[in-house]
Image (cartoon, rainbow, N blue to C red; front, side):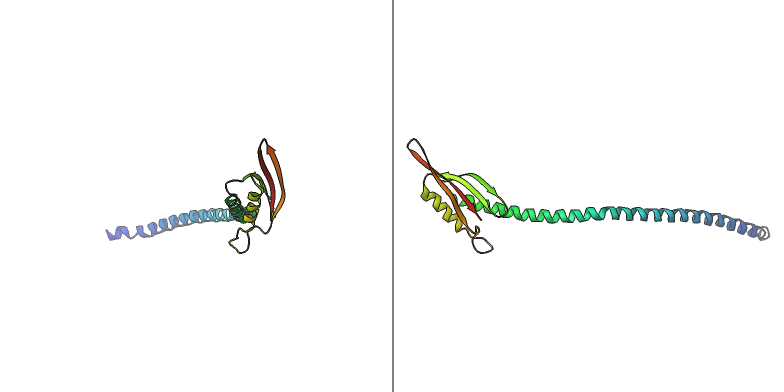
Length: 160
């Protein structure tokens, strides 16, 4: 039986070599296609990265702006809390407006003493960072009005 198999070995080896060459050629073709695909995908990734860089910079800028707005809102909330906390029970506010450097208040009450006491209370509100929360409290106006036997007063303050 060995004699019979010996002549087949060279034929089988030649067939195996031919088969391996075909497989190698196929793998090389696939590898070339894969290499082109990888190059193409890398180019697409670069384009996407280039396109997203400005967006990421814009996101960073917006996040910074958001942090500033949150801090400003916290400060505004604290200002309003102090304004309302100092108001007392006999006075009322009809207007509160704020710009970057001042807060305008308008309101009313039963006596000028209560209005001046409110102004003094606002001017003595302490800032957690030190000093007074409102650098100055300016009494812009106090006006008297009468309805029947009742006298009331309106006021306008500017806080800086």
